[in-house]
Length: 471
Image (tube, rainbow, N blue to C red; front, side):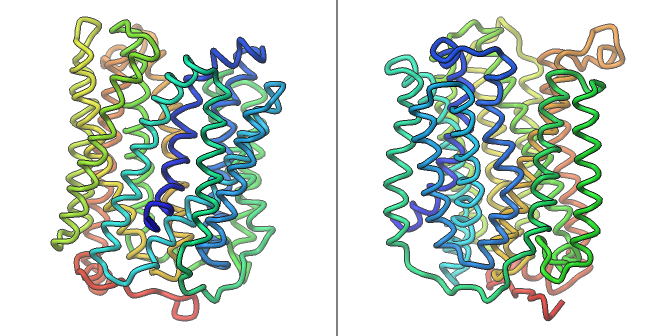
């Protein structure tokens, strides 16, 4: 039960992401609003989560995983309650923002609790596998709930459901066993503000650029402000004695490469799922609810991938090898999807998406385990936050690029290479997965040049924490 409560942080985060895209037409009928304003019902949550999850991870390391998890659940419940009773679209968006803040605390808190609550590496691997599966299951459950609950009881019922579940989770989190609280100072608030605002503006630039055009004044101004804040954050972090991301983490061999691979693989899976779901409606001709039902079995693929990864890790299989294998399997899914058409049966789209999610989850489990190993248990919170932030940023940037490929003219350069519409989007998704695999090959060579870390990544023993004083 305790593991399930911690995993529920990722489960509810995925439900929040998966459910809302299907609610927008129903919300428009109730609250009104144009496409530009209602798009924020979907994007506000992800943007705030991506911007603040690093702060959540750092606070987890400073305060402890259990109190941050409880706080995150409580804030998420408040956001769901506000969204459920929202009289206008902008109040609903405010509720979604509050939900994003809560998730930015709960997700790194839950991941860190799973990492530090046991000293058994096999049990830790199983816990992280359950955490990975919770995200994939939640995404499918969110899409299913968004279609069925909205059709049966209206869109507000989805947020009522989320409020009740998260309120129960808040109460259950109080019963979690306490783990050793880290003895770390809280990060500099100026660093948190600069980094979080820069990430927020960067995510906003992605949203604006994909909707209004990358050359528009608003998008260019937003990107310029984000760049200026990134420079200011870099200068502040370099000089600060309490940085948001501890200085020694950037020098850990292989960590940056794993984060890059995480972003690329998230982009590959996000593109496969997004365009796969769209193709079921646009090409195959399924309704919203029918498409959601066809996508529900992806949860089985997530469970299969997590079980394979957990069993392989418990038997001593190296994490980098699992990531390489998972990335290759993930690439096969969208590559096969690029050869499907409107005459293809829905079951074929389901099969190729199952390939993609099995490979992505296998890699996800190994990546999260490898990140915790590399940063050490005393930095598990910020390590998990960096991992989640890399995925969010990679997924957002990848979808923005894939949207450009999807909309490209057949007479342009993309068209000459067959990179247009659904085939082009799927092929680029496969390429992103292969690039993630190549990044981990580079990481493997880095780790082999550093014997202690290489041994830690392949052995069953506990990772050796690296503290600020040791660095």
